[in-house]
Length: 622
Image (tube, rainbow, N blue to C red; front, side):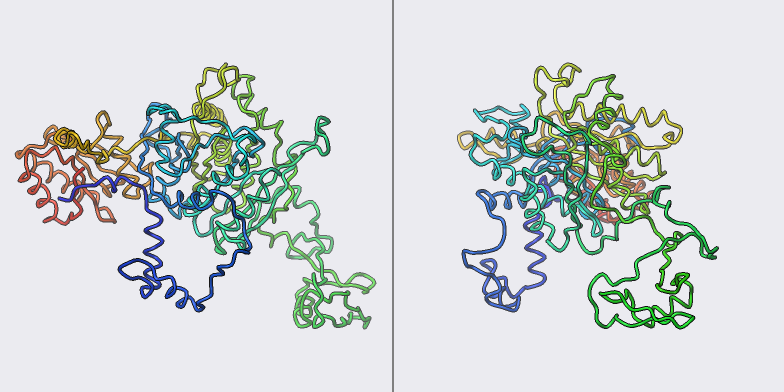
C-alpha cells in the first residue's frame, strides 16, 4: 500500500505539466541535465527564433519574473469545508471560498481545469490605496495565514498599496499576472473572461492579458456607462464609464449573441407580405474597396444600377441568386436594390461595445439592490449591478449549464446574478466565488452591521439574495445554496525535522495528518488532489463500527478510522468491494486509509491485497 507524501498534498504542478508537454513534443531537446535550448530552437525551425536583444516589444516591470514564477509554484494548502456557513450543503452545486484567490485558483486546478465557461472579475482599480494582496513570492500560503491571523505574525506588516511604496503600478501588476495565468487554465476551450477596470491600470491590463491569453484572443473593450450624472468635483472629466476588457481562451469560442428583446425587433416589419415574415432593409455595399465587386445591375425594366464606391457586398452570381429568391428586391423606381434581413433568421443580437446603464444597470441601481437586501444599509462602496453580469452570462444564452467564476467576489454580485438569471431563464448555471477575508474598517457600515470581514458579508449577501429569489414565483426550483470553504494549510503534515531532537520528531510524525481535522476536512483535500468537483456527493456507511465513505458515486472510497484491527480488515475491505460493485463507477476507484490506523504491516498488506485482487489497484495510506 503506497503512502501519500507531503508533495501529494500540493496542488497541480503547472511547471512540471508544461515540461512534460514540451518533452512529449520535442524529446530530442531533453538530456539528463535538463533542456538543451539550442536544440529546442533548432527544432522550432530557427536557431535565432528568440530575439536576445535588449529592445523587445512587450511590457516589463520589476518583479515580473517572480510573479510569473509564483503562478507555476504549486500550493501546499487545502480548503476546509464549512457546512455551518453554507446553504443546502447536500444538494447545491455552487461554491463560496474564503481565502487568497491565487492559492485558491491553484487548488482548483485539478478539479476544474478546462471547466469554467465564464470568468468575470472586478479587481482593485489601483486608485492609490484600496487593495491588500500581500503576496510574498516564497511560501505565499504562509503569507495568507499570517495575514488572517492563523499563524504568528513575526513582524510581517500588511497594508494597502499606496503611492508611497514607489512602485504603485508594479505592485498591482505583480498581483494580477499570476492570478490571470492560473485562471486561464481553468477556462474551457470556448470560454471567455470579462475584467472590469478603469483608466488607472486599463492600459497595463491590456498588455498583461495580451501576454496571458494572446493578442489574437482579444475581443473588445466595452464601455459601460454606469451613471448619467456629471460629477462637478472632478477637475477635468467626469468619469461616467468603466471598461470591460474581454478575452477568449481560443478561437473555439462561438460568436456572442444577446437574447433578443422587443426593442431589438421594432425595426422589422412585413410591408410586402413576404412569406418568410418580418424583415428590415440591410446594407448592400462592400465594407472595403473590392474592384472585383464593381459591376452594373440591370433592373427588370432595363434600368442600369451602378455599383457603390467600394463595390457590392457579394459577387454578381450571388446577387442574382438573392434576387431570384426575393432576398434582394428593387425599389419602386428601380434606381437601387434593397436587401432583406429576416427576423426569423436572427439568432440573438450581436452586442455593441458600448453598454448603457438603462439596460445594463448603474452604480446607483447596484446600491439600491444591496440596500433592499440589507434593510436600507449599503455595506459596499462600488458594487456592480446584477444586470451587468447577467448580460455577460447571457452572451452564451443558448448554453444553460456552465460554471461562472469570480475570484474577486467583493459584494457577491456575480453569485446574485447567476441565481437571478437562472430564475428568469430556467437555466442551471453554477457560480464559484472567491473572496479574501479582508478585515473591515472599525467605523464602516460593515462593522455597524456586525461583520468582521468582507468574506462574511459576501456570504450574507448570497444568503439574502437567495431567499429573495426563492420568494419569487419563478425562483422556486432555483439552486440558491452554496458550499462554503476556507483556505488553510494541508491536512498532511509536512516533514520538518528538529535536528536537535530527531526522536521526538519521528514520534510526532507517526500520524501524517494534522490533529483536529475532521473526516470531511480530509475528504475535501482528497477531492482536490484527485480532481473531483467540490460539490461531489459524499455518502457514508458504517460497517463493524467503522465509517466508510464513497465520494462521487464511487470514484473515491475512504475509511479514515483511527484504528483498523486485524479482525476488521476483511469486513471493511469486503464492504468497500460490495459498494464498488453496486455503484459501478466509470473511472478507476481510489481507496484511502490512515496509515497509522492499521494494527501492523500485516493488516495493511492484507487490506491492499483484498482490494487489489478484486480489481481496485489504487490503494493508498495517509
